Amino acid sequence: MTKAIDVEGNPSYIRILDHGFVGLIDTMGDDHAIVQAARVSYGSGTKSVREDRGLIRYLLSHRHTSPIEMCEAKLHIKIPIFVMRQLVRHRTASLNEYSGRYSEMTDEFYVPAFEDIKPQSTTNKQGRSGEMPGLEKERAHNIMSRIATENYNEYQILLGKDDGGYNIADVVGVSRELARTVLPVSNYTELYWKQDLHNLMHLLKLRTDSHAQYEIRVVADAIYNLVQPKFPLAFEAWVDYVRDAVSVSRMEQLLLKDLLQGKSVQQLMQDYNSQTEFLEHYGLSKREFEDLRARWQLN
Ligand SMILES: Cc1cc2nc3c(=O)[nH]c(=O)nc-3n(C[C@H](O)[C@H](O)[C@H](O)COP(=O)(O)OP(=O)(O)OC[C@H]3O[C@@H](n4cnc5c(N)ncnc54)[C@H](O)[C@@H]3O)c2cc1C
Image (cartoon, rainbow, N blue to C red; front, side, top):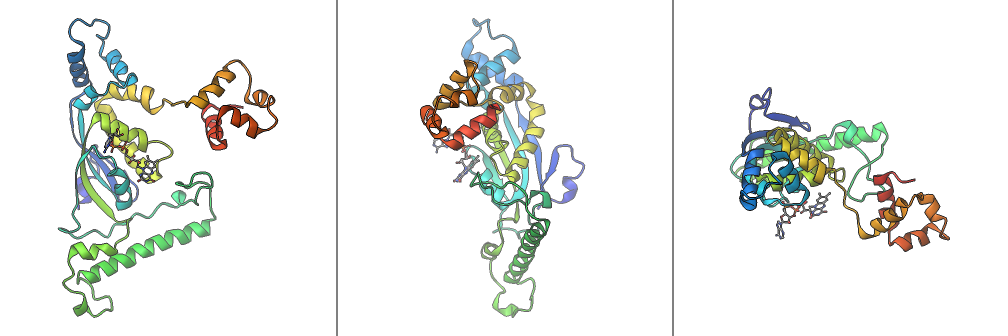
């Protein structure tokens, strides 16, 4: 894998997690390339969308996305395999990953920092939240580190690199493609990732969101920090119309319309015998209601 010297002090790279990084290798196009492509569809007769910033904001706010596909970014990323499994779900990228068949996997494994070790969330089945005793964190940290070391030793044994107390004659000759099967998904992998700007923005919308797992969120945040300066107008519009925009369901709209009449949630609830009856009226589940309440800071 890439030597640390390629990354340290390189302004195109951001270190993430304990052994990872995100680097910006190349971009194609800029804000002007988006405008140039968009103007093809409007023709010279259209006067109202002359100004570049205004046009880009119009494109993003109306989801006229094909001009944004004219730009691209190529990234160099090093992340744990379990984060790679999430990243690779974004099918619109072109990528090339380190080969555990061709080369030996490294002894680098992700072990979360103490502050990132948290218990299972009680409200979000896919996430972690809250705190746990320091002693339990320490035990979790130790188990994760120990498993990584032990499995890497077994990997070396399978490759015939270390006798580790075993009879080496029994294991020599196992191929790299089979030996790697004993490594945990915390093992680091490395890849090149190229994606057009529209689909990269879609990835960033999903993976910078607070519902995404922390470990992929830091990848997405680093991508944003590296790519944003290359397309400042497009990202300004993306933040305003996509990233920080909220979608409102039909049921939420009903409640919000009633609240806009000047009543508080508490006052509206008084018209019903119970909270259940109130929620039934708007067709909201308790979770949807609590989510809406938090998003709009409703009392
Ligand atoms: C918080 C979170 C939790 C998740 N949990 C899970 C989980 O538990 N299990 C799981 O398996 N996945 C999970 N995912 C992955 C998720 O379901 C998507 O696969 C992933 O986010 C990629 O999104 P995408 O398909 O929109 O993106 P891309 O693959 O980048 O596609 C971009 C867009 O292209 C279009 N597109 C691409 N391919 C097709 C196609 N074959 N057919 C139609 N349209 C296509 C779609 O419009 C799509 O939105 C989770 C994602 C997030 C963000």
